[in-house]
Length: 320
Image (tube, rainbow, N blue to C red; front, side, top):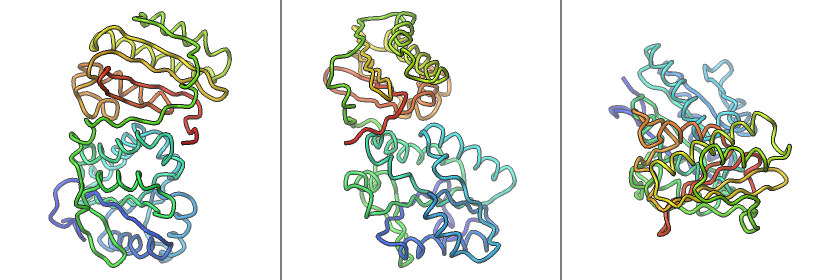
């Protein structure tokens, strides 16, 4: 039987934890973790180094709480979903009636790559709903920008407060709706320059060759192979499922390669495209899922002119 605020709830009980001080963070996290330990539930912390140490010092000695390397877990959205589903599955297989997790995204993700992590926060309402999970996603209001906090409210059904309340956010939006919205990501500064490569209706083979030729030793070989594979998948999907003409543009910056592939179609029908593998692999669902695991940042953008997917391998954290 599930315990705490999630008692009687089926599936994923997803909360935001918004705080303004260390004391407010601990006021929510400590009762949450202690309650899990007392109930014999798997209890997990996925906070960054400073906050993890803060919580670890405040817990009773020997408390049965697992601390994850928070920064490693949140390298890429698809990787985080895959890792957490494996963790949750192992606990359920061992008979856990409920799993408790408190985690946080590194502050660097609130910048140029936030669009992908906002999609992640929305998608996990669906991706984890087949597990008896109660999780709290911690956001420091002193650090998170207003647009991030606005997305947090729309992607979390509930908010946990320092005085012990668990209340609806009031603006929560179902994932299928949220993920289908036009959410333009900031242009990479290099996109304001002339592309190094521009191809119209390229074959996947021509696209692969263009990426390799443009690299000129910039990326490590494995990273280059990942980008080549990702570009090939995206071009193939655009030619097969999109509307021509398909345009590929590539930019080379000192620390990254950026590739944008545009077609005149509406983009994938599946709102979870890229974040979860399509069950039957249709409409490029599996290829997009692999692509999202191969690149350091992937953006989706729909507008009146069609659909654009942008792939970045290298450092995606440009100033915004």
